[in-house]
Length: 494
Image (tube, rainbow, N blue to C red; front, side, top):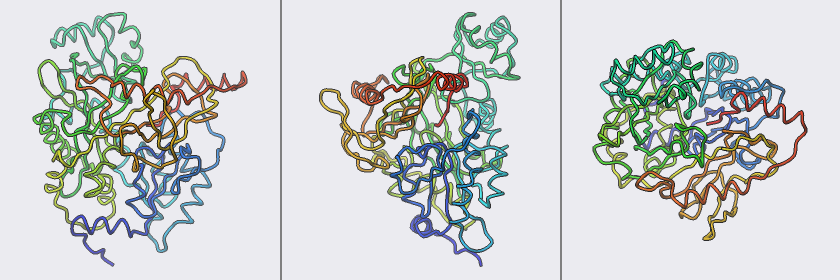
């Protein structure tokens, strides 16, 4: 039987509210797609961490089984898909008939994930892992941008043999004495190296020289921004341009590390917003030529000295900014961006006026002001967590103290700037170690000044939440195991 064509947004919203096909978001936490279960019937988060202590109605956390130390989100994903309790859940929820048992979405996945989905009878709602990985390569990002006519910071793609070789490359390409190097893969600043001396280079020489090709860039004083979009058969739908919080020592130990976002209409001059949107369309078309469909994110860099705007990187997936995009006012007026991603993989014919949607989403009057902070542990000690704050609504007092108000599953009921929604990631029984993800705080209004510094309110929230984390006790053996985990970089959930 041929599916009836969906004509416009009302039909599309109705389809997902009535759909009997289960949809699963399989990841370490529900953070990236929080709230999507209110738009898609039978939407279940299958997670490794129970951020809500069993109180979320649509989160399934299987019991712990023995496993090696996780070194990637892909390994967490595959652990979950291999779990007997997850397999039983999928079989139990499966609709009748010969079709798939459900749709599956992920933050990161690989070819093993594809094999597990086939075994479980799940439809993987993303392009093939090999294609996603090629696009996720920061070297390929630069080439895709060049092809689309979206320029990057002045750079050269090359191998680097040693410090003298790097100097000769920079001199020949007129990149200056202060350089930024990136390797092909990495997240939140892990593989972005700021180098202005031989001493700086020596810290990262082994990693840099092991790569066949790195991106050697001119250092520019810049401001980061991010934008999410979705390639559909009717064109690319583009979300708003968000600020990025990068490298704040109160939140992350990495100089180039992402640690939050803001959505507000006047964050950037109109010409910058227009450039970002045009660039997203161009990148979307370049991705479509490579048979990429669905959700992606672009990072931009605005040069504070020249006003130039450059392509930073392309992330072919949902990201840490996705909850901001999908819970925004414009998304509730039409539909969350991720819904269009699912629609593209539904197999159902549909008509959609992409130009009309983009016109509304570009209108500043449809954008409300929200910010999120990604709070990491920035100390260097390795200590067990004895107490941790609950996920839910918190209030900031006039004296800077932070108090728990009530449980909540996302930011929906937070309306004033003295309140915030906190999603706990590291909980009691976990460990403090350098770079550990403690949680995400989301609140109305800005958390950076116009000069892109943390506001006093932001600092008070960070301090207040940290005050609710308390150290615990552990045996020597447990300390040794935690040290091994920290040496591997720890769990990375975002």
